[in-house]
Length: 197
Length: 251
Image: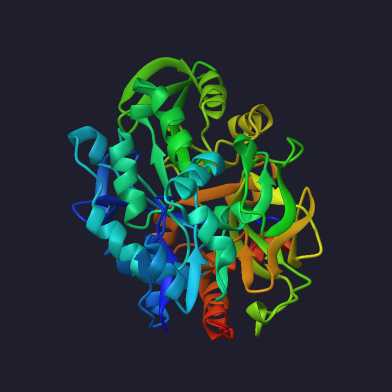
């Protein structure tokens, strides 16, 4: 298993690497385009602000590489948001993989949503063995609305997409690497997805 | 539904967990990495590590401990104490901390909050506020609660939100170490004043205190140390009790 975590300078990626280590897999941090293209599986992390993260992707040329990857790709948190069409955060143009816009929660609720909430209406092998209404850890101010590519929903202010999938691209708004044993199970499921590379 | 969080706080000095009673007398309560793993297994929602000596003595929070915790623990954790620069935070996040908590350094230079929020995102910036009620008015205190300021709690809370803090960790110096309950009146006022999550800290003694701080204090999370470290309140029992009181928790 050649697992790459894309290292483009955005946020806390060590904890994803550590989570895979707990599963017995050595994930490699890389920003090298050839290495990323050749990987069996790719993790696209991201924590922080959308426009500056996107800027770093563009500077490294990864913005054209990621949407063309053929192997399973898992975007986490901001990674998932950047895979969408656009984000209200910093008026950011996204990678356009998921056909949905990322918007900010209103002030009717506390922003950011911070803590454990449940994921439901699970529709993907990514959630194999995960029960409905399982708790996951989330920290975010912006959300992807429900759309055709929604594979999990969460309720905060309203129902939104806590996970998305299109072809080989997966995205989760929550942090599987910080969501206890059930989160680790989702990472393990991702590792077990078939590759087309 | 988003659940209320229970957060054990591990005060760290020289790589060991300690709990200050009113921030002074220190009692050793174990190895932070071992404790952190235990807490994750026992149902803690999140952990906070505060290097309580850091601000007083200018020491940096221990990167190695952060590294070990991040490797071994599968729930989120915040690191605070002695953080005064973007570089400090970069290093801590790089080694696996999920959030950082800043306190005195934010009061001394409030631009730090904006700088951190811009660079790393608000979600990882916790501003810890230690305050003491003096003749009816809450004043912010610095350096582990030892230095009073003339800054009013509610003004400061609004300022930190405006500058991009993702969360406020509010410790009442009047309640800390007393085990007589949290400062629910001030907490409720904070919660209605700002639109970011508030962590209640200082005063936990019984399970009812937690019920009260979520119901009356409108807190989003509650933090405590000694009642958890010395097994006085088992976290799962606490969560069952909260659930019985119709407070949404992760069980």
